[in-house]
Length: 451
Image 1: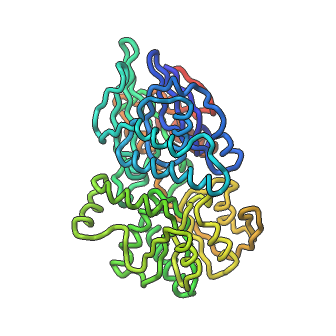
Image 2: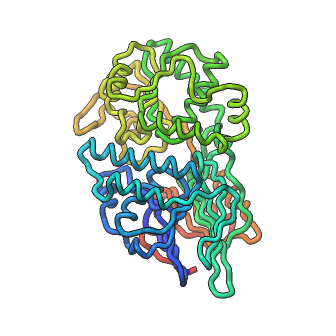
Image 3: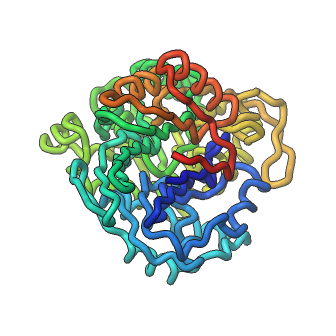
């Protein structure tokens, strides 16, 4: 078989792996390129393969950098099936519709798809349960396992038979950061011939989960004491739900005083509703709380800003206040309005809980630059910026290594390290090479391998 990489190769976004057997061609993910203008332009270029020849897609989860180019694939003629969990299907639909809405609103029309394309695309989804063995074609079978990254996220085990030989490929998708609220811990996989592993945090360690919760608690109390504003940029998917869960716990256990809190992200509000519909995918602790009558995502003082008018009310509301606002990468969403208003004030705290790539606005804030550029204009920056890595939904270096090491009988003959900035991927590859003694590869974009 032949394996080639069409995104997330020595970079974080654009996940897309093509596998070609003698009879079948399939993709693992088909994600959007993000973070920089020149990177986003790559989304409009033709695929390096013919979408009409792709038999099916395995979708690991619903983040845009894994599902965002599916409409482009459809527009190019793909009519095969898309295999995922049911939460991934529902979340992907919400995420892709929002991508179209935001791009149209901001005058950057994503021309490779329309809303009608999304409706037709969703008909191609075939939801599969965790642990279910599914024969896809004459030569390929799959099994979905819980990746513990976001609701419905999947590790794919894929068995491919060529002639008398059968090989097992394991695609990690994005691996979670346990122990995490709401989602289960990532499953351990038994055996693989080839492993494809993400490396977002492959060269660093996270803070303990409890430290992150304590930091959140501390910053809330400090904000109240100085009558200030605490702004937390959030991803609508997963990070928002985890923060609401933690705030609900802090509030109900009286670990923090009452503070007016705004969730200013229509998409996050919609996705929280999807989470509630799929509570059977929650971990045991979350389900126990639900069974006790607790609403995991609501607490006293929380207001949902669904409309532009609601957002203006949140911006003008008196301090102290906590703002959860999209987006976690400081791209799109309503975050810029708050930054323009509050960055100049020393009573403002920006808590960054998501990975920020080099050159991004978030990275400039963490570097404590005296001024930053927002929408082409210069703004003074007197705010405090802090980072909390324990809320990351990606496993760190230690967890990734331990998870890969646990794959035995057989151990992978080849390991492909993907979905990480170049130095990060190379760092994880070096660590894995020392431990596994196997062939560890950090592929370049477009590279093709025989296996």
